[in-house]
Length: 320
Image 1 (tube, rainbow, N blue to C red):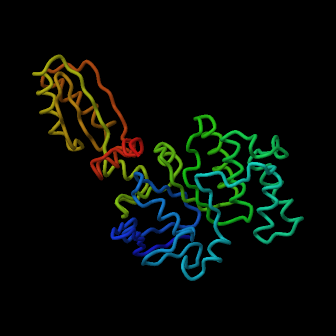
Image 2 (cartoon, rainbow, N blue to C red):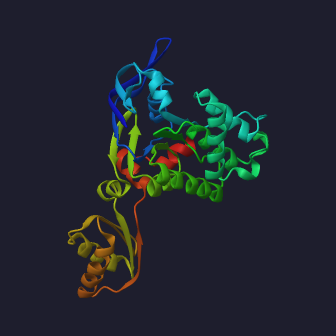
Image 3 (cartoon, one colour):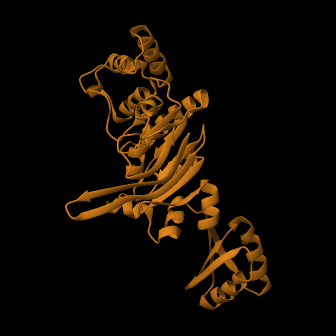
């Protein structure tokens, strides 16, 4: 559905040159849900704008839904839906009218546009306010309308750029329920950008991490966390001496990657924390150390980003 090779974008302002995207290679198969992650300024939004034909690349190639983004822009646009960060609907228009007008813009007849509008109103639970003006809708309702607008022409590929930013947790969950249900029913391929790492972790089948204009990781969330981060086991013992003895035991366990001691606590990074804990408890008991508490924490995608770049993705978003 998407294939890019050596995709670049350079901006020039006066005598300054900024390489926003530096040779990005991405493959997305039909039916996948792929998340693009990266800090602000990493190049993911520029990449998305190129893939949706809103920005011409400086070099490289990209085919989207089977067509070149430079040679067949109209063909690409007919086959994609794009939900940007801002609302795509006019404030003074009614919900149903906006959907019908969108259908007409894509060449549907009036009858077909009305029929498709009603289908989407039902599918995205817009019926209660279909006759209301857009300006009266809540943030979650507007986003559902935005997604409906992006799906009017039944595109095989949907781009979602920060679809739940600014929404409360309940509205976010509700929106994702609608998105995932429609994906199951239609098989739509989805490319997502989000600052909510838990969304990418739980929703996406693959995660592509972009930083400084290049792809630095591309795999399932589970594989990235297993390879680039690790489970954290925190063991609390009686005193510093017992902690040192525990650390010595932990370092001999095959699944352990790293061990640090802080007072009476031992922090153990492990590929398999669930199997490390029983072995660690057996070995500490064997050397006469009594463990008073054990805590297991699973790695997050932010841990992955921290391991890749030395920075927390959450911190870069906050600063930005």
